[in-house]
Each structure stands twice: as structure tokens, then as C-alpha cells.
Image 1 (cartoon, one colour):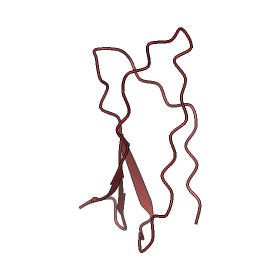
Image 2 (cartoon, rainbow, N blue to C red):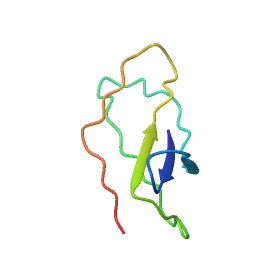
Image 3 (cartoon, one colour):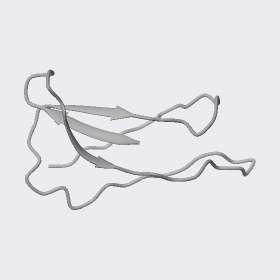
Length: 66
């Protein structure tokens, strides 16, 4: 998962990446957290998910805190 930020919804800047292996359990839910993102500014946040296989990816909730 890659997190990017932009002040004008163009020219997004990569602020962090989380790499985790594919989940093989029957419950395929997971929580991912990116902390200590100092000096990140922007009005828009882009989350890109790069699946490890051809499976579907669903995001139910994203929290962004100031």
C-alpha cells in the first residue's frame, strides 16, 4: 500500500509505503497503520493498493488524523 499527499489534487508526493505478505487465512481482514509522518502537508490523500495476487481489494474505512 502506498500513501501519497497533494495540496491541489495533482502532483502527489509519496509519503510512505507499507509492504505486507498476502493473507492466507480464511479471515482476510487487516489493519495497516502509518505513523510518524512528520512534515507531510496536503489537502488530498491518495491510497494505492498493490495486491499480491489477482484477488479483489476492498477498503471499508480510512482515517487521516492531523
